[in-house]
Length: 180
Image 1: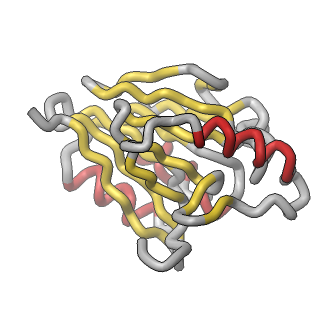
Image 2: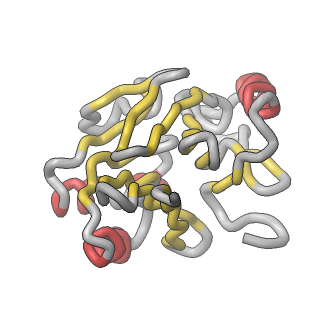
């Protein structure tokens, strides 16, 4: 029985947000609510989801600009981020490497993947998919030349990802590459 839905939502020019929800319970999480927050809230409402979590994979504004709008629309939801990248937000739950959350029947496991930013995270969704933010794209990785990026940390993070099962579907933070 299928119970997991990962919906890719194009926001801004080439960013992706992700709505992850359990079809049985309608419990949901939104990952990286960037530009176009009203489009995201409409999506959540049209599916009658109960938003439990707002998760940010890293602190850059193209992945976080919609946080306040989403939080205002869904005040019961909890903001989730790493300590390193959540410093400038009103975070409810700080996570680190290996932490997990549940939304309905879905397990979200977090991997700390610094490099693009000091506290970047990836999210393994029920051992089916991985939401990578700007750590990993299709055929590339996130930039490390920005003020708080680190090439050596990115290399170590990519080694972690390399060890993950090949069957995971990669959901990146941007529409970069030959195909979405």
